[in-house]
Image (cartoon, rainbow, N blue to C red; front, side):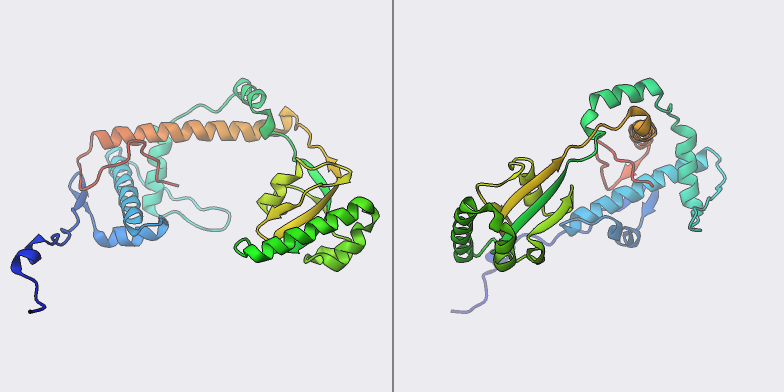
Length: 283
């Protein structure tokens, strides 16, 4: 029989993808070249998602530029401390938002209420003075993990009999460079160790050797938490300016989304739908 497929089978195959729709804003076409170039600013796991995000960003940009011109704004670019200067289009977008989206600065009472409701955010982190013995084993090495676990149990039994042997055992058994200093990691805080190790610290006994190993991506750790230094609440006056900036920025973002939604609602946008939540895709 011939290896050629019957005509009917060929006809049953999905048709080739149609050409992408032309995207325009009030008759102004967003070119495919411009979308392709903008895509680099919108990383995504799927190329199509990146292209759609880029297209939406350019649609929002065109909306704002058209509105700025309708308002009769004249570009007045500004430069930052590093000497970087806005383009005329960037200036027009900024000026349009500054003129049309006016929000109040968060007052002291609003900042005080936010501070009281979110006290945990305004606290210095707990610090720990820690020693450990690392028995290295990769997460996907089942036999290596089993050996490390058995070795950890043997070391814990030995330490139960003689806790003072920790430094010597760290020097001979630990796969971490800290073994040369008795396993000491010094004083550590958030972000200074891997997340698994950090998460375990708050639940470990202070002043004693933890009865079970801590597992991380690097292996099993026998841990001694020598000291915990509790964090402290930061006074309101120390964080008031930060809170005011955060609250004002949040209101500004919400107001900008609403403004963009209004512009989009009265514009003739073709070839793409903007997100219902319309994020402000401007700097």
